[in-house]
Picture 1 (tube, rainbow, N blue to C red):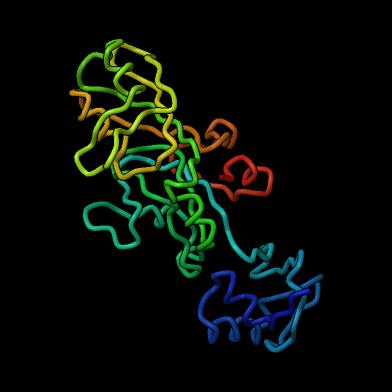
Picture 2: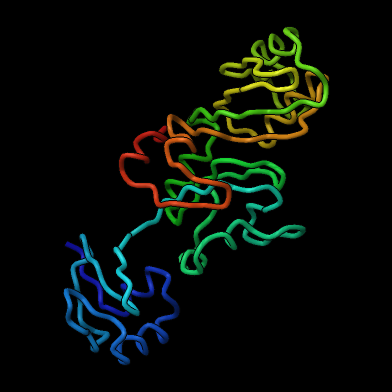
Length: 237
């Protein structure tokens, strides 16, 4: 059992600073089980805790795990330079919680993006050594040929890699489209592999991580949802 004072509970959920949370409590804005709590020092078991703030129910989450359908022209960096950051698509409390993208998608790449405030989870999902498969739909500048698919499956040499990198699978889905599965998680890997195979990636979309797909989640561009245990089981290394 983990007990925390009410001000710490609110702060941990991204409500705001400790001072601000204490003011909300003193103003009678927080209730638990229908009872208004005005003592910020009151301690509660966080396991399964639900509290009400401004009339809205909040479920206490020690960590948050989020899936976002990333639109184009958003940067995954916490300090974006040329485009809005993906955190602007999420409620403000996630910034207070120091939520970060798990790996990165380029500003022009769309699709499934994971975010969390759990450092161990971020490391496990981001590490190339964990071999979490990721499925991409790539549109190429030049026509797709059987030779291109064969090259990507056999492995192509990137200038800063000690050995060739190969796709787990690669199939042609259109005259200028392929579906490619990677499990190394290297920087800009799809684009660099296509360039090394003497083609060029003109559009890129990530549809699945592990066995978790955007179709499963039903997210339209720009939409997000919490990942629950059944979802996390699909993306564990």
